[in-house]
Image 1 (cartoon, rainbow, N blue to C red):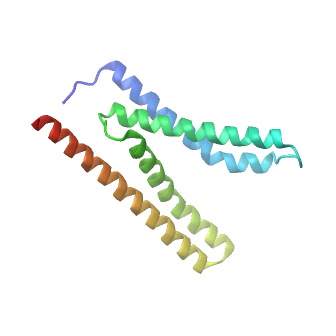
Image 2 (image 1 turned 135 degrees about the vertical axis):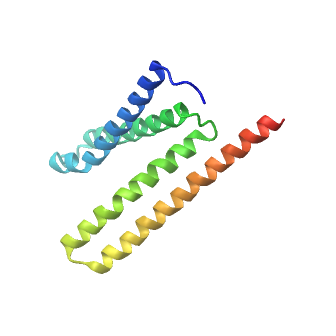
Image 3 (image 1 turned 90 degrees about the vertical axis):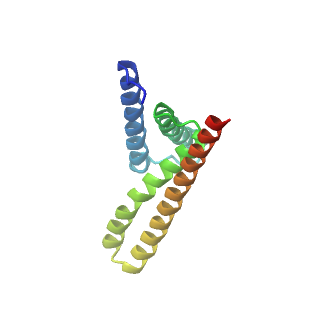
Length: 145
């Protein structure tokens, strides 16, 4: 096992900090857009808002990718990063959806959406698991050669 240096610890802390920062920014986006709606016909404002969304998602993606790389993963990092992000957000969406269903007093909608989010989380978990097993198999074949 590789010895963890001070610089390695600082890099991991920065990667986790980036993940938390961009996650919180992404969660806060709908509320901030609701408080500051675009004036009618102001397309520059809408393009600016879309740019912010793209930059926050890109920041989250590259923070997760950096964290995976620091943990020694080398196989299809982009796919592993997307699988991890979608898995966590699907898990977070399930209780949020249950809360929304309670507010709307619609148990049927809540159950259907909870099943959809749980199925998405399961699919992403399986995707991550498959990518990790492929990474292990690729590393094993590299050592054997």
